[in-house]
Length: 200
Image (tube, rainbow, N blue to C red; front, side, top):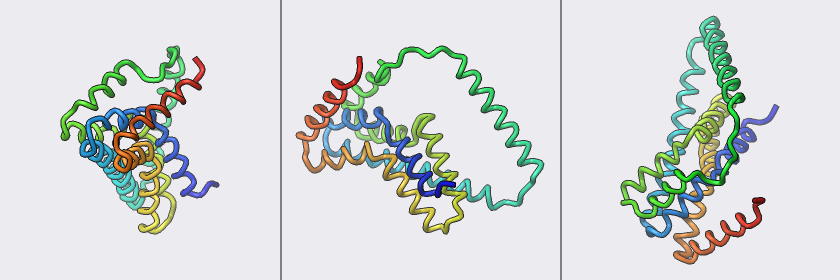
């Protein structure tokens, strides 16, 4: 069986590989350091709070008195619901996938022209995440909750998860704060090079 830390690291890496979060960070950069710091800080704090709240809920649920019949019934209902969802998703034909949808590209274009508070809200919403990020955060929180570690070790795992899961946001923010406008050109050039190597 894998150690809980390895589980958390794997979930963090999967959650962190988010092209939308990276593109959103680059889109905010032309707006200046204050907005970039606000966006990045809001993103990381929202991810931290989401993971911490899920761990606290998990700890509260696992320490309550057990009711085997109720627990088994809930597990069966949840399993049947997931099977039904999987069948429904499996039957839908897949459309050809684009790198970013037009709606996402429009949102990224608007990010660079927003006010500071709106940029903060955008960071919070992206930090809490869509279905993928939220499910991976819940899985990481579950691994942390059931790890059997002390509270301090659990807190360290939460911080480790957040650092890795948000790396594509806070790392460009740090680079931007240090290098300034030059970092935008560097990151856009890196994006273009990656795009050029992609199959058509």
